[in-house]
Length: 264
Image (tube, rainbow, N blue to C red; front, side, top):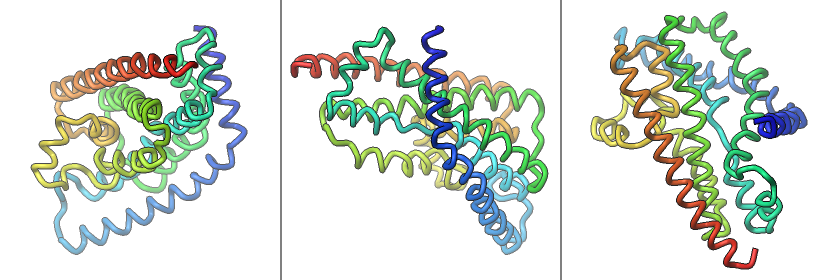
């Protein structure tokens, strides 16, 4: 485990080198939240109702605030790095290291995320409590939210990693990489809560992993589910992690054979 701790430290040091980007987010994120605040305030005032699709105005503001916080945890650029490593042959030196490539990449990005948690997520959460009346959840909801958030981080990384593995066959995956973020953002409820979507879309989303990246963790915090349902949804989230990890493992074995067969 000591070698992976070193990898986490390396990721943290790289993040510090690009710390300006993290601090800029502290300015842009509140601006986007203010836009959503007045947008939904206008919608609630225009409709004249206290609840829209199961959300009060305060809960809706809290949803978007938590959506931004969750976004600081659920991100990954591993597919871009994998594409470059595969195209230019840098993958070889990584394979020679006495560490598993998957866990090497995962812990490195974990180190990158650590600075974002300290510089972005925690201060922004405090801003939400002070200025935007963030809903205060019970300790059980916070516990489920934290566990689900950690699993969401792993889910997002696995999806990015699987996309990165396709570079072994396609070489260039810039299009997939660019499409990944907006597609996941939309399907996970990052643009609008999934309860506002048509029922058919909601039914389909139950068979996909994306809602467990944003919508489910946020709903845990806001207390939208009973305790039994939260345990069930958390179990499904774990199953998705295991399924995607298995898929990534199978793809890696086939990709490695192709890579070695090419003379690497």
